[in-house]
Image (cartoon, rainbow, N blue to C red; front, side, top):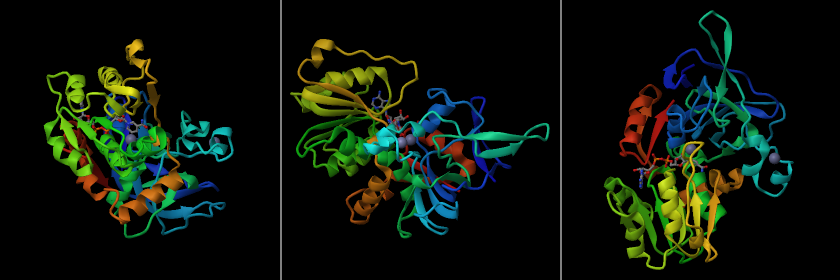
Length: 359
Ligand SMILES: NC(=O)c1ccc[n+]([C@@H]2O[C@H](COP(=O)([O-])OP(=O)(O)OC[C@H]3O[C@@H](n4cnc5c(N)ncnc54)[C@H](O)[C@@H]3O)[C@@H](O)[C@H]2O)c1
Ligand SMILES: [Zn+2]
Ligand SMILES: [Zn+2]
């Protein structure tokens, strides 16, 4: 089958990739749509170190094709949204209801794909983020699949698997923004737009979107921003403080730049919280003014929106069906898998909320 494979610093769509069958607690899913997240680009450009060969993509939806012997919650034919969290269900973190902190979900390399190498020998190909949805068929743990109604478009459902879970979850689960509190979102990409709509859903007060690309203003306001700041060439902290003179209750950094992490802490009001969602290079360091933190301020990291995938995907889909969560509006453009480089170009040039690959 076809797959977008990362190897030696390059991403290429190739034929001839196979995937093994499901084990007892696994399912095979025929992928129909997959979102392109900046984290996939960060693997290709080395910001996120990951050894190849690996099939990229970690935000997808599809139809269950085959279920392992112990699978009980989904069956062949079900439409599912995939998540990257293959949590064990029994460890201390899982027992506390914190699946994204389950050690089974991070740092373990699985190699469910194979290809025929140059010498004719079969070689293993790794999975990325337990998902690898830039291909036609994947094998994942049953717990990673959340059933969705068949009338939800796959192109929209696919985006829940990272962008929505991460952005909306950061607001609702990690920061727990309250009614009327002020929010700044730096970076209006797929993650930032979902932080903005999470703030709208939480009924935040003023929601200030910040992006150096002025073309992001309309979509930011569509998702719930009350204000838009383009800081190009100016002091972003001063511009935000013109709107929020006492500083913000919450700032979500959704770009992954140390200078913006510093700016996020400088924008905080008393008892404010900076939430770091962007992923800079693995060795990046950021500074902050220690005395500035004295007034009960907090800096927090956030993995995958501190999500409870089975609960969150289900409630987000329900909210979408009632018009309270925007998904279709996130899909700026669709591309056949073969055109992934065009999608990457469009993401980098700032013309997308999300680009979606069709398998
Ligand atoms: N924490 C997590 O679990 C998690 C999950 C997914 C993605 N991420 C990370 O979140 C980040 C955003 O991902 P995305 O898919 O939304 O990316 P994206 O490319 O869609 O969006 C990034 C946005 O930032 C804007 N931007 C760039 N430089 C800026 C600056 N100096 N000031 C203001 N805005 C600026 C761009 O114009 C763009 O709109 C990436 O670093 C990604 O790796 C983190
Ligand atoms: Zn992602
Ligand atoms: Zn666990």
